[in-house]
Image 1 (tube, rainbow, N blue to C red):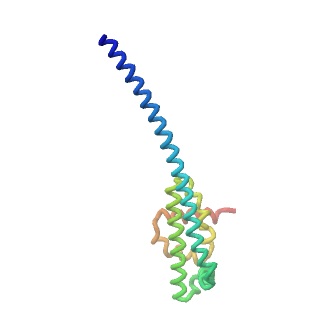
Image 2 (cartoon, helix red, strand yellow):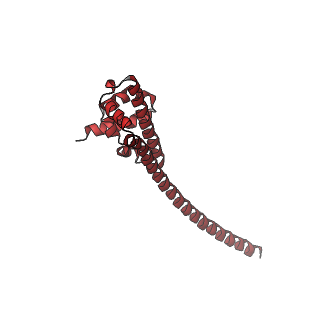
Image 3 (cartoon, one colour):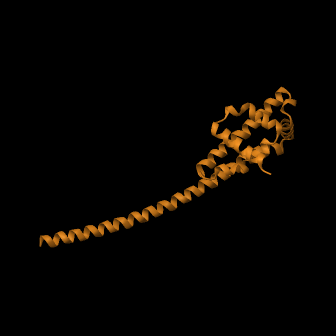
Length: 163
């Protein structure tokens, strides 16, 4: 009789283990689905942040002819600007590069494998192709995070070497 109860206990324990494993498998599957959805949301937020940051910058250029002129003249030749305009141009670029840095960080967090290829979204090639901007960058890149500097430099080198 005790042996029968022991066998019954083993049987019930085995069933409980199987039920627990099935429950855990379901929970892991649901967790995996939630993680994937979270990653998709993070990628969408990174893209939105990128669009928002650069839309704001472009809006300054589009709606204010004086700012657009300053950006054009500074990009062409930063040394030709008056000291006041050089300061304004530098602050404009500081905002632009700070936006790029923030977007790069957001992309890195949301898509760890592909963020280094996303420099095209940041228009680094267009921005750095302006001689005044390239000069400003060379003079001030030490003020930025080394990883961001490497990101910009790598992106710019890739653009210059492209046919």
